Each structure stands twice: as structure tokens, then as C-alpha cells.
Length: 451
Image (cartoon, rainbow, N blue to C red; front, side, top):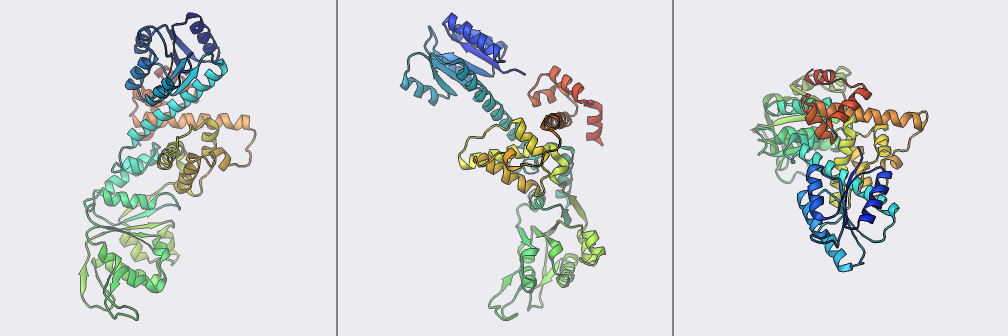
């Protein structure tokens, strides 16, 4: 859909010539001779970009600027003057003008400024849409980001498990977000006010493991000078995450099994039992059932922990979420580093979709941060061997991306095509045309969502 430009200038000759040039450059252009006419045109057909002369009879360009930026802060307003007034330019930029051009301007330069402004507008509106979709930190959709069927099912599973007080095994490849899931299970449960304690089983030396989990009394062993509360006891009333539990030494697994079954422990060097009231979340990148059958993990501990299970899909299996996740992480990084977020063009989206992301969400977050601070684009970072010709490959990937985004929007809005088109930022007619061209069936999508 062509960018809609509203050009406001009281000079009829300049207005007509500029309109013709912009139309030849592919823009949808409306013209007004003064501010009042511009406001009337905009109320009937809202523009994407406004270009206004500063010095006009009646309301001036600063009035135009204030009117449009007050109504929509994401709308770029470009001001033009023939007076070279530096203080005026400073005031215009302070009030939120996107750019300030001096007459006579080069038509090619104006086109370039408009295109950059339109890119920024689209990006700002997408960021706003994502933030409204994701919600706050306490919102599950704000933690487990994605609109794919897998992401929706994952959020539903976590919400269901958070409402019951059972132990859970979370399984997924490295970087898929197992600790994010564990934290969500805690924060959305009735134990949210209690402690959340995480322990990485792969990072603790075998000879310190028992003391780390169960604690010890003074004199329990050489060097035990005082009482130490173990992680199990410290997590009382809350949640304990045993990350990379497949790395836990087999002899210790028997003691952990007893603590899980009886919900009580004894510190090393003590005969006093300490009752436990906690949820245990065990995270693993290995199939614990297969590991138990192979003798690498205790079967009885596996079955005792395996009350609830969450299996995290790798990022390559929910590729439609990749651009959404990338933009979210890039937006966060840009804000953190005080940078302006750059638009993500089709070549970079294609690079994101082409990569298989062996490091999953963790790898994607790193790529997004490097993009946000200007180190490299996804296309530069993810340079891969060619698959056929670029001409044959890129359109296919773009079509796949469009197909995934449209299907996700329709699922999200329960088949309401008008709402889906609005969320995608395209007219209903354009959505229908794209669905026909891409072979997307509304019924198939809604049946997939309900299934």
C-alpha cells in the first residue's frame, strides 16, 4: 500500500509540481493550500506523512505540526521554509518535527526524507503494537513471546500448570527459555510471594552437591564452621529450580528422591528433620525418560518429578515468531543503549527466517542486540551458503513470512477478518487478495487453532 503524503503549501506552483513529482515517485499524495484545508483532508483520509510550509497566511506550519503530533505522536511531520530561520528550526524540532528542509529543496532529497520517515513511522507503530500485544512483565504473553500455534499452546500449558501445585519437568534445547518458564510457573502460582531459588546442577562440584542442597551443621565435615541452610530449605514456601538436572550425580539423586517424596530433609551432621513446602521445577535439555532407561538417570526420580511436563519447541519449529521476537529484543536493547531502533527490511527478515538458530532464543537475543547497537545486521551476521538463486529463494521466503503473519493474526482474532486486517495494518480487501494469492484458507487456520 502506497505511503499517503499530505503536502501543505500556499504556493500553488510549488504545490502542484511537488505533488506531481511525489506521485511519479510512487506516493499517494493529497495537497492543501492552508492549515484548515489540511485538517479537513486529514479527517477524511488520515495521512502517513505530513509536509508543511512554515510561513503561510493564517495558521502557520508550527500550528500544523502541533495539530498532527498531538493527535498521533508516531506521525512524521516535515517542515519546509524559504527563510533559513535557525531558531524556528530549533523550535520545530523541539515540538517534534521529523525534519526541517529549506527551500529550494532537491526533489530527490525530499523523496529520500519521506521514505526514511515512512520507515520510522512503520517501525514505531509496530513497536507500539507489539508492546500492547505483549503487555507488562507480569503478563504471560510478555514473557513467552510469539503468536504461533506452538507459542499459544505453550502459554496455555504454563497457565494451567501454574494454577496447580505440582512438580514439573521443563524440557528443551539450550536457549529455548527453560528458566523463563520456571520463573513464570512461580510468579503465576500461589507461591509467588515465596522465594524463587535456582540452582545449576552442572555448575556445582560433586563433592559440594549434598551440602549445597541440604545444608549442614557446624562441624559436619572439615571446614564446616557454622550452620548453613541448603537450597531446598531456603526455597521453603516457594519454588526450587533444578536446572540441568541431568547433570546431578546418581548417588545424590537417591537423596533428592527421598526429599521429594517425603517433603522433608536433614542437614548434614543433624538428625533433625526439617519439613519442606515447595514446588520443584526440573529443567533439562535431555530426554530424562530415555536417560533413565539408559541408566544415566534414576527412573524413580524421573517418575516422581514427572507430574507436570512442559516441552519447549526449538525456535526453528516456530519460525513465524522469529521476526516478532527479534524486534522485541532489538527494541529493548535500543532503549537500554539509548539508540534509535532501525527498520528491519525484507532482506534482513529473510536472513532471520533462513537461519536455523541452533542457540534458539538466546542466540536470537544476541543478534538483536548487535543489530540495535549498530554492529551488524542479521543479513551480515547470518551470511550463509546460497540455496539456489537469490531471485528464486527470496520471494519464496517473503511469501512464507507473509503467510505465517497472516495466519497468526487470523488465529489471534479468532477468525475475525476485519480485526486481523486492522492488526496487520492493511485494508480488508488487501488481506483477501493476499490470502487468495498465498493460498491461505480461513477455515483451515481456525480449525488448526481449535485443534
